Length: 75
Image (tube, rainbow, N blue to C red; front, side, top):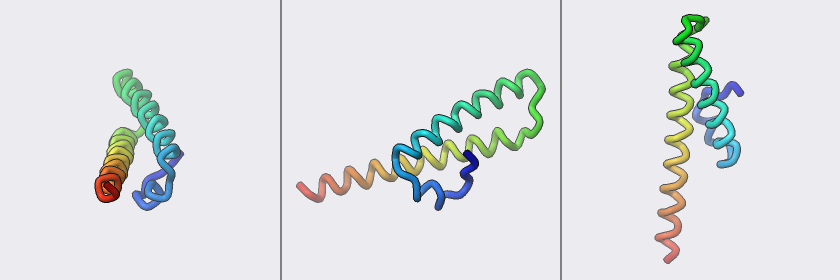
């Protein structure tokens, strides 16, 4: 899945984000293996994948904080 924009990630559900995160981690693992074997075609893919993972983790963190904030307000 080729998701690059934060707005696209925000539109996704938590389940979809989890799926994209797992795919990105698998891809990053494969890219790192290829880099070790000196067969990596585009080294920029490593950077792009790391950024995607960071964006997803940030969004998940923000969502969990918002959930906690809503729960404490309702008490």
